[in-house]
Amino acid sequence: MSYREAIQYLYDLRWFGTKLGLENTLRLAELAGLPQRRLRFLHVAGTNGKGSTCAMLESIYRAAGLRVGLFTSPHLVSFSERIQVNRHPISEDKVVRLIGQLQPWIKAFPADAHPTFFEAVTIMALLYFAEQECDLVIWEAGLGGRLDATNIVTPLASVITNIQLDHEKWLGTTLPEIAREKAGIIKPGVPVLTATEVPDALAVIAEAARQAQAPLMVVTRNDTQRPPLAEIRLPLLGDHQRMNAALAVATVRGVMGLIPVSDDALRAGLQTVTWAGRLQIVKRPSGQIVLLDGAHNPAGAETLRAAVERYFPGTQPALIIGLLQDKDRESMCRILAPRAAGIYVAPIDSERTATADSVAELCRHHNPAAAVSVCTSLADALRRAERCPFLIVAGSLHFLGEAMELLHVSPGPGHSERALNEWNAARTPEALRA
Image (cartoon, rainbow, N blue to C red; front, side, top):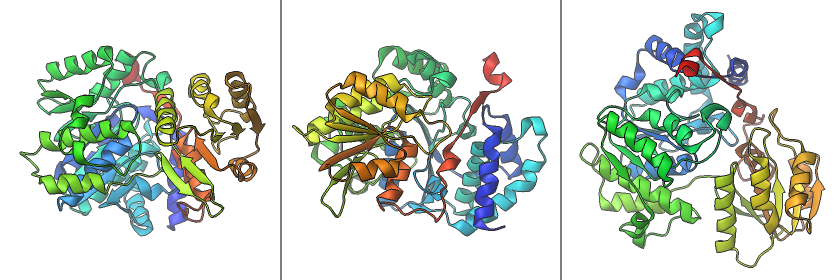
């Protein structure tokens, strides 16, 4: 099997959607020899900030001398971004070998219970991290938490970044409903840490922790003013990243008895953390400044708007925006469009894209003074906006990955692997009964 054939095999698994439930993943793990039992985890769920918090935790523990696995999703450009050890993405030959291992196990499943892409990749990651003898794995939940494939592990700590509206079709239409799904990662007796600020959502998490007899620590904005954060300038822009950092620090301290980390390693990890596509500044040869941000829901858009006001006061940037059909497009345009001097709307290279015309109509409604251009593609939008001195690209992580390739920020593998991020969740009978 070649690497292209291996990626095609993963691509074909997308047709089985995203089934919310643990039965398939547990069975696959058993066939794989239960690799999760040879590993230690920090399990991270939440609406926004999961990836950044995971990156901070990984950086801290790597600075402490540990061999650290990092499992995140979605990827921006290359599938290998999802599975890393000490921030080295999994190699193509190892992807091929692991898929070869998985194939006979997957064939053992009946057609009506076929494993999905994410279930298969979850087991791939567990096998790889076990083979690599990782001291610790930073383990990001995919969709929700309670019925997410990642929830087959028992971690050293369960981390919930925050609760906002996103994926309402699958997780619930209210913050307490979404909190219930995220709180599903809480395990009996395992410490829980959260930066959730919404009282109704926090109450759900607290009750889940109480029932599991799991110690709960709530991180607040006051924690961002305490050492070591009080003296550290983070490489990642945005006040929200200080909250993510405070949560990471609290998590490290919460499991200090199991994994000691020195103050020097804690500081070094925070001061050297990198995480692409989150308020990432790119300076093009022409002098144009491009701000790339993965804002893809209203809370993310608010964070982006606040960051622009703080770091680029008085500017009127141009905006390239592309949105997915299953997102809150009205709120996204209401938040982002008014600050833009000019708006370029492009479709996302995704079967879930909203039409550029529909997004443009919303942008015109929320900023009648701006010139709004409908573009045929992101490449077309970048060409049209090339003379704008300050440009923001936002709306979807799918969109961002394409922008990073077009801007030569992150060269792709020679063929697009962004389509692997597509999914079509389908609730299982287990989920419907719950």
